Length: 274
Image 1: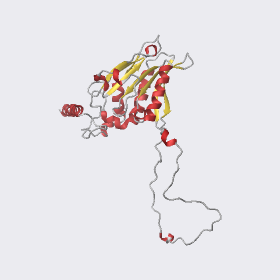
Image 2: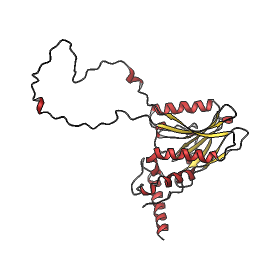
Image 3: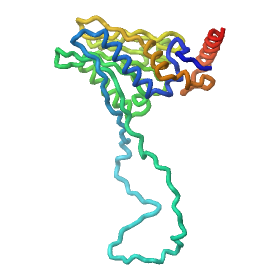
Image 4: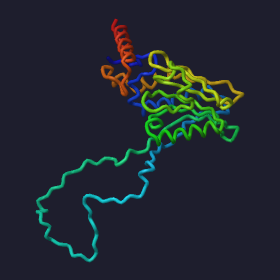
């Protein structure tokens, strides 16, 4: 089955495998839709930072290392021509050259800045990436930035559309009602009431929420229509030509979730062919 438009009413879990492209698209589209609603003295800007994977503390300890084979320079020793092997007959195999380490990921988030207050950051909007959730170092880095925003009395909007990874939202998992814990989630922390959190339901079986984005205390909230952004990313990325709905998305869905989606997709296909 192929669908030119997003066939699900909410988030499409098959898009999670293409999060680099989806994340960039959502960030850009969100900036644009917010820009049109902001007062003239506020601006929405896409900011960048690099995710850093720090080595574990244990790996920094001084250790004695004994390799299997050592090549040691010994000045003054005359090179021997008797190598005991027909070197001229050897032909080197060509190695496969790859990156020794994955480059740090460039992550993007949106800042709304006040032009009349020395470009003070009013609101930060984060589309959570796997780099924020998957490793201890990534979580540490994200949580530090999260605390900086809250301590600086910046409104914080966190949008988590990835099922994989550890919980990193500013609102602790324990305070979420069960119906809001999965598969996706949205959390808003307002600067003037940072001890509270505004939680939104987000799933694939119902449209993603239109989120109220706080600005300055004297401003009205602006609106971020998440479902419109996801649908736009699906269509502009031409994912209808690429996604294979006969396979299980990664990470796998729960049995009841998968059954619901398969039934829904079959219904959509039947409606289209009727």
